[in-house]
Image (cartoon, rainbow, N blue to C red; front, side):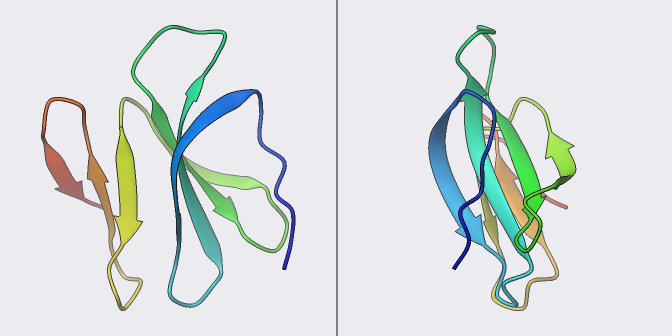
Length: 79
């Protein structure tokens, strides 16, 4: 296992890709009042590889080809 350090965020949810290479963290920066972001991190290094702004939740499909994201306005997007 690995400990991943993220900025001072409130974490809403965490999803790990099926192959274990990526971690999606839906979080809100506690210092900036706005909708949360999804940070996609490399699970081995902890480095941010992708960021989706204004997203409240995220999850990977069973094959790991898609990242499903959900906004607070109930919009769902496959990326």
